[in-house]
Length: 387
Image (cartoon, rainbow, N blue to C red; front, top):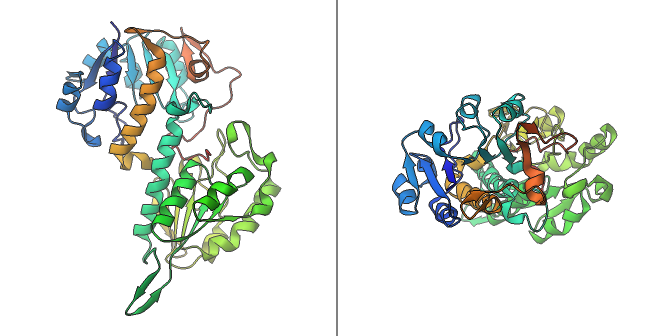
């Protein structure tokens, strides 16, 4: 019988877990045994006894779990010491983020692991239930607006008070993928006046349906859309025209939420230092593209800084700051993926399945990335412009 292992995440600041009691029960229904490391779900609101009631066995430590598991479900890419602890010939499912650990692919290959990268889930109707990037982008877009609202020293909604009328805050969202659209919806629910920019014309109606104004329509072009609906990298001239178009909107905004990313490339710099200088004192930039270099020239990944009176939040791994629902969503994505792999209690890897073929990066001691499109470079925060 196959044993599926769910370890506790050890990357700094990571509070999510790859399986919840809900999904453990469904994993057990595939005929496999499920082992969860003690404390794996505590930060996400799932104690050990909840997993035990769902049918999992609790492992005292990671070494015990890795000694038994032949399918390992994780959130974050494994550290070197974790890879060295995995049983040879086992399988791994997680966000791999190979760009952040250049030697990880070789370690996985040398360990003879079959490794699947959740950031490589194809954008097809059949794979939609497994789309973990979109799930985590939803969380990040929501939390970004909350960060902006709590940092901004003013109300978001229009208020009619005895002291007079208080105008609503103005929010400008850069990039209308999943994270951007969720940021728009959240800002609107809080009562802000919202504008949004994207180079892809197809998102105009989605932006407007959420009650926001679509900016820079003259720059929207179907030629700016890459395979899978992502935005293409712009030329230097196109980036200059983009900055010129959005400049007055950035200057008027109280909060800028930046989500624009191009998979496999550095995030485009849309907000220059000069544009920050022109913003109103006390305004806020929440840069969800920080891990990809940042949409703002002054962003420092993982740091909150102040420049020219503007607070810049280099948001990193926001999904982990809402661990209960982030884990719930991610675990459901992983469950749907695992159900492709586990049949009648056994692990069966069939590369005739387009989803398994697209996501597998190592198998049988070989890399499967040769000639493949690069994976998105920001899987940790998952803020790329998916629509």
